Length: 132
Image (tube, rainbow, N blue to C red):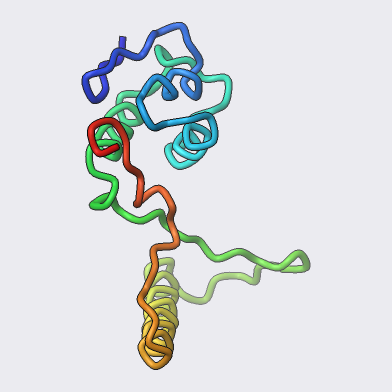
């Protein structure tokens, strides 16, 4: 049995249904959690890897301090890769710099408009068990 937040999750139950035994986690939120931690719909609690179990437990304990999800660039449908002229590290550094510049522009725009920055990840505002 997996013991998470003082709750025993039954071994033979599907993970997405077992998560609903936590007070405040419904089917929709359970599906989002499974997606975030790459847990298959047909995966049972006993089949979870130790890394999935540990990351799920640490996220449920403090979702606001959790690391953001990595975002990878998406290619258009007609994209054809050309042979690499730069190393992976150089490409990743360029991508991160461009992303930081976009983020800075967005924050400046929000400050000009006088709006407060909101989190894009709804799971960071998760409240369960005693917080409810």
